[in-house]
Length: 115
Image 1 (cartoon, rainbow, N blue to C red):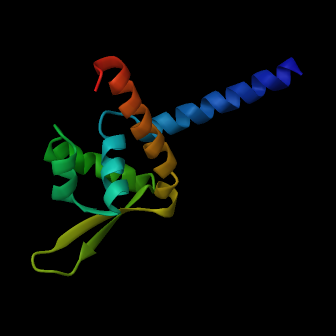
Image 2 (cartoon, rainbow, N blue to C red):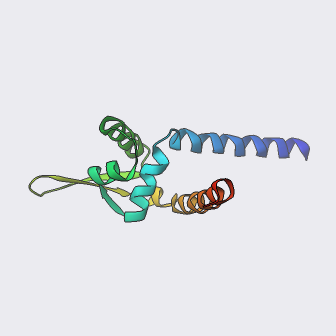
């Protein structure tokens, strides 16, 4: 029984590590949050939402999120060309996590800062 529990724990810890590998860094969660809240976001919208991120870093992070099939980049046939980012169905599964992080962050700020 204990060996089974240890194996299950190892698998759970590996799953946490896998999740962190995909969502790792300062910017991925805020980028995903921006897209989550608005459903569709243009590059400049995300740049405005995510305080402190550079154009280059946003571009890099968006590519990584696209590689991990969390977002999709759509080029609109407009003048000038518009690029929009949306969550994939797989990316939408993060909505609950984003909501939980938001709720926890609000409560944590109240507890620590008092507002």
